[in-house]
Length: 100
Image 1 (cartoon, rainbow, N blue to C red):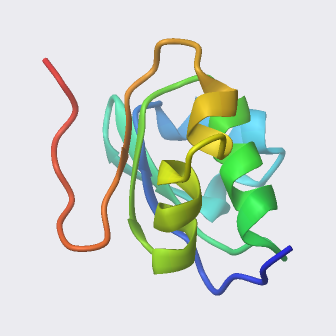
Image 2: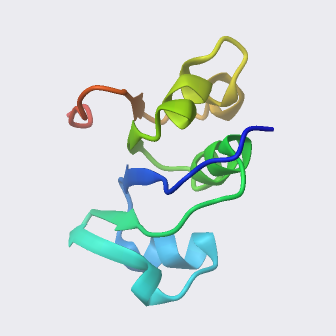
Image 3: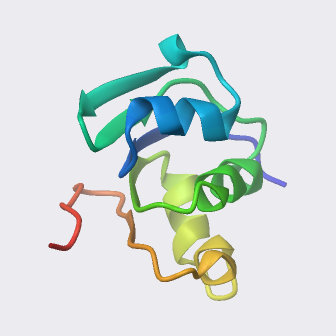
C-alpha cells in the first residue's frame, strides 16, 4: 500500500453532507457552493483515500496527488471497484467539470 500526501479533491456533495459521511467536523470540509465542497486532510495510503472517496457515493474530481490519480485509473483499481454510476474525474494535468 502506497503512502499518500494531502489529497486534493472536489466533491459533488454539499459540505454538511460530506462532513457527515466522512465523519469529520464541519471545519474539515470547505464549501465551494451549495452543491460541492473540498475536504481537507490526508489518508495514510492511496488505497484508503480512493476507498473513502468512492464510499461517499457521489461525483468527485481528483487532480492530485498523481499516485491517487493513477490508482483511480488503474485497470481493476478503485474506479472499477466503486462503480455506482457516479462520475469520477481523476487527472494529473487538469481538472474538468462534472457532466451536465
